[in-house]
Length: 226
Image (cartoon, rainbow, N blue to C red; front, side, top):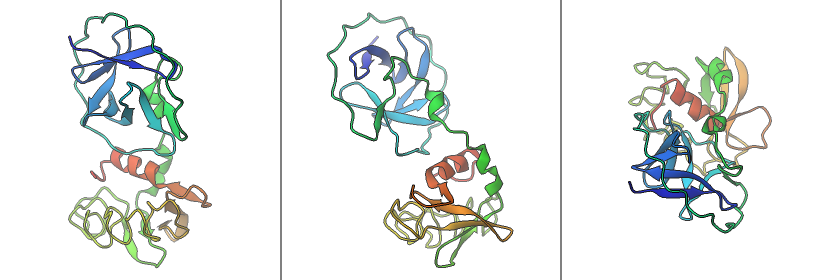
């Protein structure tokens, strides 16, 4: 059995990887490794990155909405030989966090309760220039729905879609995009004529709806797959 040992910043042995699966030292399954260095929990939710120095870290400033197909439960492996303790490793720069900082990691604590966003269903996304950007809906046939990947508001390449990372309403650097963390003019979400909040990555705006939380919530509702 080929094993890669995982350590925390203090140099403690905290987990191991074998056949792409992540286990704690007692052989309890924690998650999987995908795409080389991405770490996902047992439900397929992204939790962090595997570093070259054998740590698993997360960016506290970002909630990623990436997912993989829910992995199959692996066969419980044999307990590997316990490795020697390492010397303390360099402190991680802000905003990164060692997920095994305290010797163990509860990946479920990384996930946020997004149920409070359920009231966004049926609301409209309106750009700061009053351009209509779609209805928040899981109707994949409605032309106005953001879940219609072939429609004007759900496509990755549509001019009027927040999912078009090269467009004026989805680009990372566009002033009208919710993904621009410095924008003071992000889209607003309106329902029955009432403003519910501003969809934005800008942490300093009042009445904001975090766009990373929003994207993660969309995945729970099977609205988008981007």
